[in-house]
Length: 351
Image (cartoon, rainbow, N blue to C red):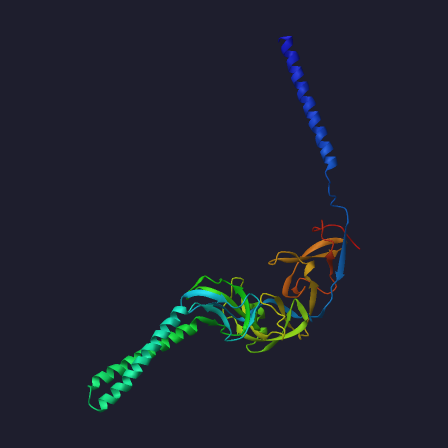
């Protein structure tokens, strides 16, 4: 073998050896820099010793306040908008004028009909005298009387159209939207204003099927608005859903009176609070102690200095607490805080 080839091979091996040594060195440095969690190291946790107790938490359901009556107001006839007499935030009463349409042409037509009616009334009076004297045929009087009736119907129609050029509030409330301006063209179906009545309110909640039996039609219930928790409200259940919605819960609606100064606004959040008079005993734990999924809830217990995952069955949730029907016993020591890095079989120290 040529000595040059031998030298080349030796140099090649040397380069590879240096590269491998360098990689091992880099790996060692990287391992030193990366945090290595010591699974044998004890984890500090907070615990609670479970005991049987009375289940006294109240039921609470969150919902939204809505106006009992709300409508978009439009014209019944076509016409140019001469004036909008209110603005957003205006408080109006039933029958109050809101929008004035142009009615000048209708008034001119009314004047023309009034002239016709005057002439026809004169004709009817004259023909009545002549008919009694057999000076004219009775058919002429009949035609004059029919013409007078027709003109009066036209006058009544025009008066009704003129009346409809003034758009009035169908009920008392607050203008919550202005959807058109003066100078625009109004027509049936084109909304001009939105009128909202919040003197009476609806409150809507969604209730799971296993708690639906707590509500009875026409019964009174205590309500609270989140923004005004100091105000006590009373609502009557007037709708209890007969069909589940997409979330497999049922809609319940309450009807209630607003405060005299209309503090509760449409869209505000609130709650229905039901007193829980049930004196049953059970194990109640904080919801924050539950790990796992809704379908497979679990908690960490401490046994012989180690953490143990325990599957549980939740009977119901009351506010921020959960009533456990299976999986826990009085005297069990359950972890309530310190879940970071906690795992099944970890060594634990109680704070």
